[in-house]
Length: 95
View 1 (cartoon, rainbow, N blue to C red):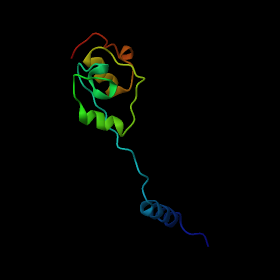
View 2 (cartoon, rainbow, N blue to C red; view 1 turned 90 degrees about the horizontal axis):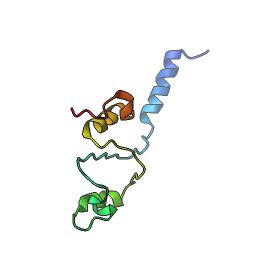
View 3 (tube, rainbow, N blue to C red; view 1 turned 90 degrees about the vertical axis):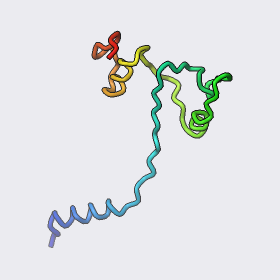
């Protein structure tokens, strides 16, 4: 006799619920206005002290290949939409 579909689905859901969750990475995305490439210690700054950012960079991944618009509005819109600024026409507008 075949078990009803509801019983099979319930059993699968129960197994999935009690299975150990995979370790997910903690992701921190820092957006700063007027921060230059060499304004943080992990990129070579000597006159500006950034010990907390240096510690985060030492213990995590640094992404060094990226694109950003020179103004804040296109950058914010790109972060929210996942599209390049020229795709939605906010290259020169400050909101």
